[in-house]
Length: 224
Image (cartoon, rainbow, N blue to C red; front, side, top):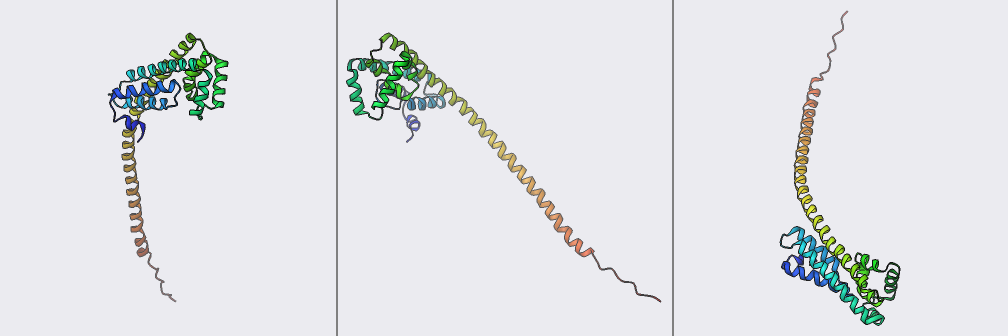
């Protein structure tokens, strides 16, 4: 079953809690499909009035900020041995190459890596724990975390919601246009076929007449 189909079967409160929980766990360093859950829920909100997009955006934002903060605390306390353990547990996400890439991003961009990391799936998982491991000052991390969480979670919810509303309106309009176009095509096809049938009948009537009217000419007898 598709995620959005499954979300349609659960109450709105459960969707809010699920979005906040999954995004929070992803932000603290557990590889989960937080963005997929958020996008699916925002699309569902655009199609069904039971899901409030404002509440959904608030839950997603809260999960992102709180999850990142917990990840920062865990990373600051666990240090690099934590990354080694995560690498053994999740080698696909916390492999040496991925960690090295994330560290280079943090060394180059600092708190901006936390902010923009929200919009990159891999860095979204790394941002909190790695900021703690690298001993980034908490006030810098908090500013980047809060603004990044609001812009990513709230912005994604708003954009997907309004895109879904506009898309649904266009699809409804397209269905009417499609119906009108189908009727016009049907009428045009019928008129063309009817016109061709008349021409074919006229040719069929003209051919026998041409054959019967073409009588041989009589030769006058010769006279002296």
